Structure formats: C-alpha cells, structure tokens
Image (cartoon, rainbow, N blue to C red; front, side, top):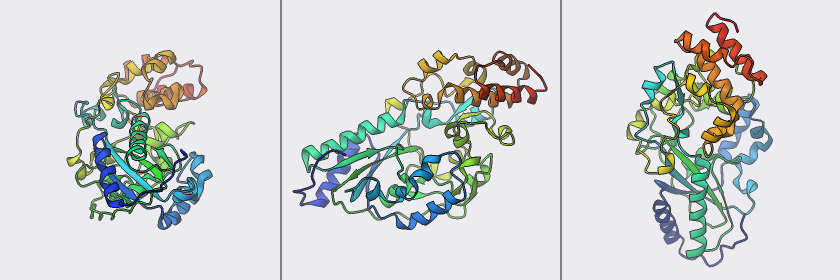
Length: 359
C-alpha cells in the first residue's frame, strides 16, 4: 500500500461523483463504493469452507475469515471502490454453436482475449493515482481476483448488482458478462445503497449446470464446477465428471448463457478483450497438436497461460474423449499417448478407452 494520507478531504459527495466520472473515462461501465463491514457474510464463508466446497483451493482456507474482513486484509482500509468492466466480444463465435459441436473446443468467453488481471489492474491503478493527484492523497491497494477478496459481496454492497443463484453478480442493465475490481482505500467514502434481488423463482442456472455444481440457490460446490475442474484444480479430474464436461476445455459459461438478465449484456469496447488465436472457434484436435513452446508463445498475455501446458492438455484430452468424431480423436490422442506428463497420459488413456481403443 502506498504511503499516502487522506488529510484534507472535505467535500466527500463531490469526491465520489468525480471518482465515478473518472472511472467511466477510464472505460469502467460502473463504479460504486462499499463499506468494509461484511460481518453477515462471514458465517456463510465459514460454513462453505467447513463443507469442503473449496476443493483443492487451499488458499481459501488459509486466509479464512480474513476474506470477510477488508480492514484486516489491508490495515487502514475504511472504504472499497468497486468497478465493473464488461468483457463480451460481440464478434466471437456463438457459444451455443460451439458447445453443440463436440469437435470444437469451448473456452469461457472471459478468457478469449488478453489477461483481465493485467487490464483491470492497470485501470484501477490509474484511477487510484488520479484520486491522489487531483483530489486527495490516500493509502490504497488495488485488487482484481488476485487476493482473498470477496468481490461479489463488496460489489453488491457498492450497489453494482445482486448475487444471482449461480453466485455471480447480476445487474439489470448488464447481466453478468463483466469483471470486477477493487481499490481498498483509507478515504472515508460513503457506501452505496445495495440494489434488490431480481432472480425471483427462476432456477435456470441451477437446472442447466452440467455437473449439478450449484447444490442450492446461492451455494456452489466448487469440486463439481467445470470452471474449477478445468482451471483451479491441478490434479486428476474425477472420472465420473469427465463425460459431463463435454468440450469445455477452459471454464464453463452455461449458467450465464441461460440467465435471462444476460439479454441486456453489453458488448465490450475494450480492444484487449477481442478474441485472440481464434479461440472462439477452434477444434480440439488443432489445440491438442500444440507443442509446449507453441502454447507458451500463443498464450502469452492470456489468462489461460496461468494454468500451464500440462493442465491445458489434460482438459483437451477429456474433450477429445467426449468427441463424436472417433477417427480424428483417436489420431490426436495416440500421438500423445506417451506424453511426458503422467497426468496427461492418464487422461489420454481414459479418452482412448472411452472410444473403445487402446494405445
């Protein structure tokens, strides 16, 4: 946290108005202010961890209740500036078309372009620095899915939306296709009024989940979630879940695709989120043929690069095991049956067996 001071701030409402305007000038679609009292979220977090729903994400258990205490995470924090940045590239191939073709690889639409961590962090730093330079020096730190921060809890308290039954933030005018970022600050800013919930009796997100990971409204068992299995989980994917993953090789958007509120999702104006490497419409076979060096080179600057070549190959092997074009899948799988990675070999062997073949 930079060594700055909030002294001299007198007209707080004007400051908040200017912060929101500067945020829009930087490309954020919405900016709001949250307080740091997340006390009512703490019991839910403790129970969720106790049930083991975080799976192998040990960092969540390590940080424990600190996630629900922004002032403990970053001492001196009294307010959180929350920002929303839309990511949907309207030129990307239709998600339903890709998902319905077992030969093509589905990549969650948020990961088709440049790594969002870098894009958001840069914008948040610009916003925080502008506050310091033009209005009031302050101590701050920026976050975007990069620390034990309860982003959705903070965003809903900042008036940016409500928590949907799939646990993502929903907005009446933007759905859920956006990233969230935060500036923890020692500026005493007034919190926004939370908006009401508008999911009603709808359960489409729960019903559509391929692995039934949404075990109850607002409750996700990450151990069954395809996004967790293909991104966060580093080991072997449970065999009973592999057929349910289909051709989803990085993340899963199903709960968002069926959400009625995403009728109002807006296309992103951010050039960095435009599709790279044709990942919106590419075959499993083509991706599985990449070498490690090709993966590293093509995925430079992408969020996908963070999972590494081994995990990426594991996911593709599962997709090929679920592909309907047996001949093409078998050729691709046999070419890597002796892969140096035991993890990849295991999933290749499963995929070959699923097609009724051996090495």
